[in-house]
Length: 481
Image 1 (cartoon, rainbow, N blue to C red):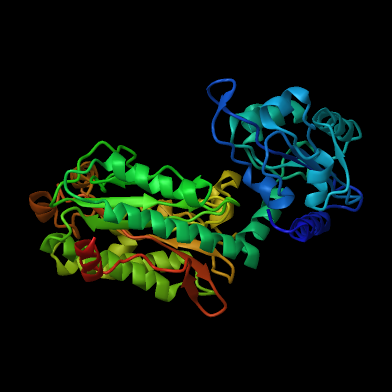
Image 2 (image 1 turned 60 degrees about the horizontal axis):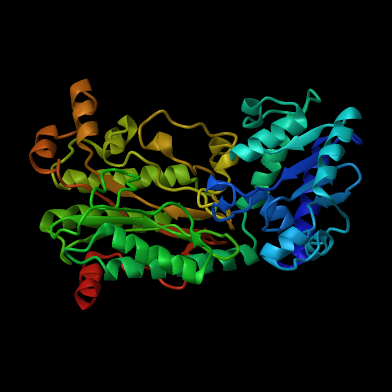
């Protein structure tokens, strides 16, 4: 939790932004529904609690069962939650009051949880607009649907409030996105902490990448680091010798010399800010010549993105520049042919990198994508491409100081995708399918990812240290471990 002044300032800014978009006296109220406990398999055996991110951003209370209302016309703020009773105290011990928790985040009024339902109903009965954010967790979907009278499906969608109806508000969503996209200094400090934990977990993984070791053992050691130093992982760990499967969560392989181990993993700080790093290491400690050729191209792409990322540049253009650099490298190996600019225009890079260059990161590892991926990642004058790869770009916006983004190029050889494109004749004038099929179907994939903060004149890599990335550096470190 930050100081209460941080949350007071954020809520005041949200009121200012929304009130400016609404007719005087017609702005209505914003309701925030925090997360509840979620059972794993029976009531009383719950998943580890994680607060809803926007509730955490504006209200700061990292506990289940809370909700809040923000009156855009009067500026009134109320936090709703229940004080513990004797049965709770027996199991949990004495707890601070809801009133004191509200005061800690600068809110002067609190009320029991049941009053929240009545307050929302009262606002609706007066014909006031009730703004809310799209919900993602099932509890929040059903709770919001019950409170507003909307269907569960419509609770997940975003719409304008110009018709005065009760529904997820585009105005609210855009205001929240515009605030959360630009990170405050206190947030950057927390992301740096998460990146330090991420550095430690990846270091642990690299040290334990030894022939004969089970992948699951490495994952357990990594995730142990995150729990000992922070809240835990920021997303389900990806660790696999089949890097051609982008999100491979199977960990039953045995480390085998000659293969590559792709490790995509991140940590959350205790305040829930995220890190997200990827490294690909040789399982026997040394890259083969073929692996090094591809690996060096991905390193060059990672470095190019870092060089180009600066205020005023769109990350879409950075993605396209990286695609060109990748194709130049693949052309030098005889895997593609023709003019690079023509290959970029035709989307040939999507064969080898079927994902975007990066995404926003903050309290969520894919920051705010629950609010709408295009709304978060695209400026109003941008449209998502239909090409494979570029069409999966989650962050295309014009960069501004305070943006936190990932830089994660990769090259993958996906047998099913190669077969599909070949059968359809896609890229036939550019792609050397004969060489791909003869030499690369069993290659796997390589991804390298850093976390970047856009600064006034460029960017910096987040965290106190950069994980080893250059091939000679990786081999040298692994030989010492």
